[in-house]
View 1 (cartoon, rainbow, N blue to C red):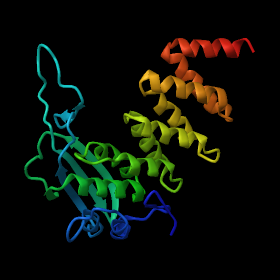
View 2 (view 1 turned 90 degrees about the vertical axis):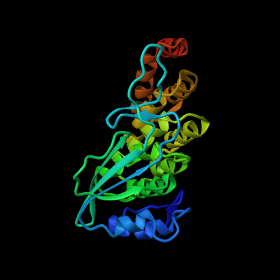
View 3 (view 1 turned 60 degrees about the horizontal axis):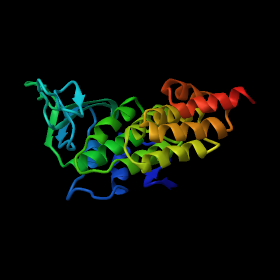
Length: 258
């Protein structure tokens, strides 16, 4: 079975997570969370793990900046909380929260507080294998895990044509939120692939538009000038127009005077 960035190219169900777990480094001693998940046939499972520094939440909303001169919002530093619903070994839904507390009296099986790395491994496995919307829902809590670098795995998923399109689009979106040259290079590589799905490339252009202007504008200008697909060039021009950046105006002048 061909692998890409440590991930199998074909999707498998929940029952296949035990196999996927064998491909993931850093397994827990004894049974991994992926193996525990593979044993779930029906019902609801929940677990918690530590959030990375710099984020907080109230169970519903998540914030990255707590500074204010006049007031301080109620905001917990964690943990990240995940709820999984399974029927006939198929993952139907995944919900995540930051902060807050579990309601009493739930019938869910609670795995308690688990290591953040183990949680990230499970979430990445679910994102790559689930065949429902729960796959794309797994990516956001993955980005919140403490002491974990999620971006190589998320980038591999974004590049993998066997992963569900909506999951890949979510992977691209969160890559666009990531700081640093690595995420930009990863997004550029998706645009450079002439066989890539147009919907994925349009999402890449959007993700680039959300980066700081010093990163976004040069990348969008490059797409607008050189991408072979007119639809992708048009999307880049659209986001350049929204920026109001003088460099974008220079491009428009260049195009109009051709």
